[in-house]
Length: 567
Image 1 (cartoon, helix red, strand yellow):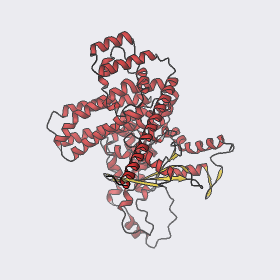
Image 2 (cartoon, rainbow, N blue to C red):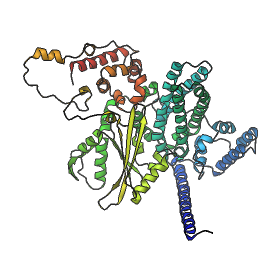
Image 3 (spheres, rainbow, N blue to C red):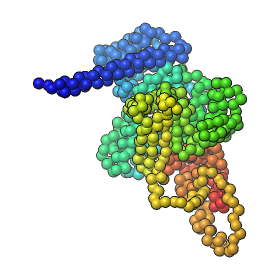
């Protein structure tokens, strides 16, 4: 017989279960409403007449074929007779209209089977685009990737030679930049126009393949040859499947849905995140890169000024002073403070909208302006979004006010903290995310209480040294302070010289490269960690458009300046 305590416990469990079930049902209902809203918005933004009967016929053919109710030949005949023609965006509209589907559907769906089924009616021709169009770079990266996949299929037939595979995987891993740009730039643009299926489903496929590549690389590094080789065909197949889904539906639908002006605006964020291989990065630069870079530096001040003007502060300008809680600052100063903080900051408001991020040179993870105005849950893969939403709900309810995470990567330790933002009355106003590369901090030992200008050539700010007092024995001091013989000599540089080797000997060169060309500001971003180990002078020449000899001469000039101690 149950005691009253047992019955009470059972009742509490039942109550909790009902609460969770009701919450899930409510969330599903909200998701269905949002899907309906997004589908309507997508149709409006397409500005094209949609034949509902045609979409229903297409989805029914797809269902019947997948269920084995009709053969491929029967499906093709019916498609030709009942559909006539099928545009990629029509396929996308039909998919967008499906409610409460499996978020892992993109990975499970056999896109090649769908292409085969609708081969006689579905338009699969690659669009003709300018070389610097954002979609052109995705196509170009896929073309390069196809060559790498052929190399994998060829190399897998022979006894494993580790260095060959390391070189191949060094190139393959750069495709992750393709994922990053797509998730931060293209998906967010599509969301704004009502097509959020890529964020819901394809993002998971991106991350699944990225994890496969990471796992294979770990097996290769650990000399687990048999396991590594066994993964290669799966990785090749998955990447080809992804490219087919991108080029059959995603890119053509993007072209139909996103206005030309918005693609033009997208270019700046694309360049900021980067491109998978050098040949696309070279084409990505506009004719006048320096003025654009200069304009970007003032974006925050200009945006703040415009926002203040919107709410009645007509005299707002970058030099106008404002009373903040503990001081007086101009918009320019606010901009500079955010830009020079040693941590990356992202602010999400109480409505779960991303409102701001600090555009620092040292960002741990890439960001683009397209993230602004997005629902924060659409800025994370579905596998981790539940953690983000739990943090927000705990902060909103007042149960918690801080959440900490840290990531240990080879040669890098990243610290992440989320803090609840509350006003003077304690009302929840959002979440502040702060992120920092703490690798060097973790290595510190003992104490430092005296000023030490070690790595002075790498100082963030170039400081004019005060005039030195009169010296008693200049000759002896000069001899003591003279640099080593290695530092006095400008090294021999050829097209095959690796930039990382030059930066290792002359660390200040990394920052000084931007003096040669604004295009080299990329070296100040987190992506440089991925690219730098593999970049030769010849690669830099191709990216910048400078002749190899001219580039080498410019680099030598900068090294001479470093040796001479010039700022």
